[in-house]
Image 1: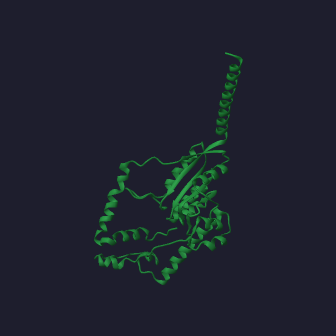
Image 2: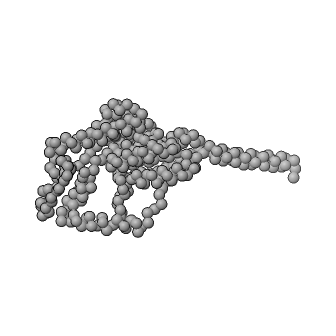
Image 3: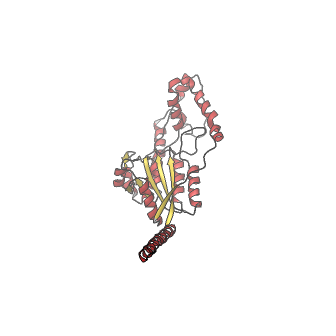
Length: 304
C-alpha cells in the first residue's frame, strides 16, 4: 500500500471517528437538555361520572386526576399538554378539574381542538398557556339550567304524582315556575355566572370587569379569543408542545401520550342492562322518547 492510500485511509478513519464522537456528544446533550412532554387528550362533555356500558366518551374529575397522577409520577415528564375538545358540562365537575390542573406541579399548556366552550374554556384557563386554532370554537361564558314541568305528561301517561316537601321552595323544580321561583333560580344562575367570570379573571390574570364584557354566553373563534385575551397564541398541538417545552426549559422535547389502561370488556357490559332498561321505559312515547331522555338528563343540572 503506497503512501497516498495510507493518507486517504487515515483521513477516512479520522472523519468517521469525528462523526461518531459528534453523534455521541449530541445524544448526551439531548439527554441532558431534553425531556418528555406528556400529552393528555380530554374529549367529550364534562360530567361528574362516566356513563356505563358503551356510552360516549366524557371528561370526569376521576379521569383527569388519574391522568395527571400518571404524569406526575413519571419523573421524565417535564410538562403536560392538555388537548381539550369539549362543549362544557357540569359546573361542579368543571370546578374540580380546574383545581386539579391549577395544582399540578409542572407547567401545563392547553391545546384547544375543534371546540372548547363554556366548561371546556373554564378548565383551560387554569393552564399556564392556552393555544387555539384560528377556527377553534371557544367562549360561551355563561350558565344554563333546564326546567321542565312534567305534570301534564304524567297525566297523559296515566301516572298520578304527589309531591311532599319540607321547606317553602323545596319543590320548586317540580312545579310550574312562578315569578317568585324564576327570581330565585335567576339569582342562583347569576351567582354561578359570577363564579365563572372570577375564575376566568384569575386564570387569565385579567380584570374581572373586562371578562364581564365578553361573558355574554356568545361564542368566539380562536382568532377572536386571542384578541379578547382568552387565549395566548394560535396554532395546533405542535405549537402547544413547543410552548410547554419552553416553559419547562426543555431544548429537545419528546412528546409522549399519557393514557389510562383500557377498560375490560366485561366492565363495559356492566352498565348495559340499565341503559337498555332506560330505553325500554321510554318506548310508549315512540319517536319522541330520545328527545325526552336527553331533556331529562339535563333537567335540574346547571351547566357551563
